[in-house]
Length: 337
Length: 301
Image (cartoon, one colour):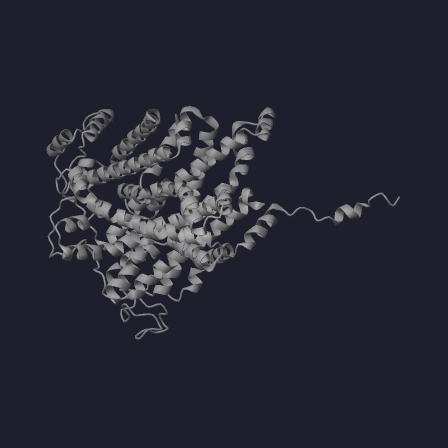
């Protein structure tokens, strides 16, 4: 087990180094001189230019600069935002819970609907329900989610007035940030009004962000179930006289879950991508919106740090899924070590 | 003499169908795929004949008709069947011309990434060793980063615009083609016909492009068809974020970005461009699924 763990972790290291290289050099591809880019249209005089070059270490050889950069990254220092002068890391950590809360709710939404829908579609293969699920899921998979979000706002916020248009909670509530997750924080504070407000702000973004994973999970569950239902041990279980429900819920479902878990792990990147668009549409104060604002302000350190942090997050989740997979399935563990 | 089979009897046995015919036979059975193909052809024709089809120029503004609703709604007129936008441009005409940019971006992205992807995949598959490790690691990194985020960062650095957006999306989807090509090359190079070609003195380039590549084509075609839909979606997303095609270009994603502030009072400026994106992407996905089923030898029997 330890060898398996080590082999998986050692695979991550080159990817991490590659990511830092990418983040480091991307900023250096920006056309023009970085100091002049930072100064913007105001311009800058020669002495101040030289002083700033020295201050940012830009007068040293590139390899030395990269060495300094990676040293800082390993100490959790991602530089400072050029606009707010705040450390990028602390800005990221302040906003990240909002993104996680949204993404977690979205994936729960996708699972709660997608897995049963996929299962029923597989059991009732070629029924109207099956065709319906497959059609809806193909549509969900093809959906431009930025448009989907606008449509939902149009229907539920504008026409019906059920949900707020944007933000995370009504301004009149001030919840003590214990965990950073508003649903949990307002529960802890025992403030039902705040909880309701947070939930009503969350529901549309959750649906929008969950749509694509929902479509993928429903399709994956269906095809995994179909495969398992054709196996010999299912026939054996039926031959033993077990009830249909028992066969499906206990024998088939558990085995069909394995590929589904892999797909869930792969959704993390999809979720972060979707979060950028969803947060922009709903003015959700998370890292996605923060990054888009950084682009508009040409705040390169934020962009660089955000790219690296989100990349590391995806990498960690992939590693976790890999390891979990090895724990569930001993064959994978052995073949790896 | 009667025991001898006359030559005509042989001729009477139907010859095996040509590969194209056989493919069409499978493809035709999938109604969704045929519908997808029909829509793709329709959008393609719309894009090509936009000049003829569109009632107005996409940039023509009408000061007398700001945010005019579609014809069937009160206040609308058949002069503007789908209504007008905030500066009085005909939405229908902009959608028709938008098909050009969206399809162009989708197809150009796939063409660029498939060419570069095939070359990198062939190199990785043929040379193995350090070259392979380097290429595949780089692709792993691109795959690990959230795709749209990477595309956004690339555009942010190169500057917004159609060309840079296409380039960024092409980079993001590149790993799929590299991986597919490399995997196919590794399976193919161990086969006898490659050994035979090699023994015959075929050079490396000949082996790569004349012998191996045609045999890896099926998965690449499927991926390309599905890839167009991803490319259109991503390009539209970049346009929506203000990083792709720039106003006043009539591109569906950019039109949506312009329309965002009017979502509260003019549903039509928001609804139609997105619907076009959805229909086009759906059509490419349906077609891609059909292609996969028709080309996948495992499912054929």
